[in-house]
Image 1 (cartoon, rainbow, N blue to C red):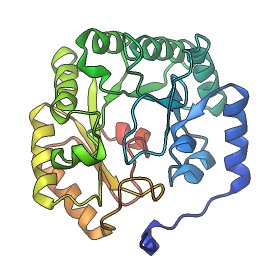
Image 2 (image 1 turned 180 degrees about the horizontal axis):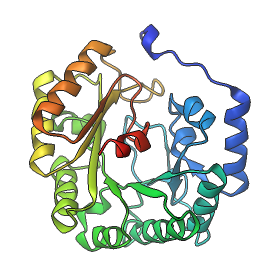
Image 3 (image 1 turned 135 degrees about the horizontal axis):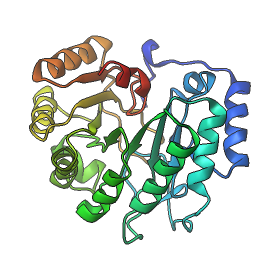
Length: 282
């Protein structure tokens, strides 16, 4: 793999990372920060922020870009929602982000566990805002209704890449189905902010990115994040290019011109990176 450019090099305090990681482990919790080897882990842990990952650590899908473990999923833990809420309280969070592994094995795709987690956070950390990053739940509207009814402030579902690359990057996902998830949430609950994110550097063209942006705006999506794809290992889909900060700035400007309420675009941006700051700006 090509050497990382200077703008992608990060440093962090290992002791701070281990302190937060130890607390999560003691509560039987997972964070996408650690499971997906996020480059912002050190910065976020230093600020006592983290994105909780519910429904275990093993995903039923095997997307070729992702570092989360694929395999037979663990049983759903009924104590997990309260543990997440307790950890959020211990960290002093005012904005709590909860994501998941994809659970195609569950009839509701994990919607009930999301709803229970949102409710536990509301009880335990009054006044905190809640953002959920959901799977497509196979497009089941009854599952989406369960999440919507729990009343999160933000529902995020990532498109990840342009439709032309789905076959090689997200072979078990469907671009239109993911768009339909975003459309359904906004139509059913206009007051809930909707959000999606993509990676670049996989071989997509600017016009393909702009076409995706237009698709996302057409379904009423409020917030867009754009970040650099970083190849986790030689087994994952190959990195094609490191995108410059200047090009990310162009994407941000284009998104704002299209009418997104907030666009985060940069080499180290991830879907939940500085999510609280994004919410404050709306």
